[in-house]
Amino acid sequence: MAKSINNRLKLHPKYKMIHFNGDFHSKYRLGTVQRVLNRVPKLKIGVITPLYLNDIKGYKWTKQDRKQGDFLLLIPQPKDDE
Image (cartoon, rainbow, N blue to C red; front, side, top):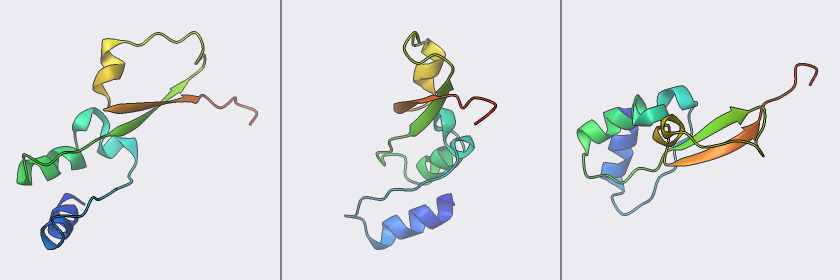
């Protein structure tokens, strides 16, 4: 994935790119994000990470949560019967 992203950015350096993947590949700016940055360290990347929560209204941010991504989506945890 990272190689393909970097190749595309080389072809179109003025373009902005959106890449969608499962959070396993980008959480904590690891995986694909880290590999892209290894090739182009000055590239600006924003990571969007979902947080599945049982209680969104009563939720309090933690330092660990803030490290997971640049933008966090708070998503209600689906109930077992849904």
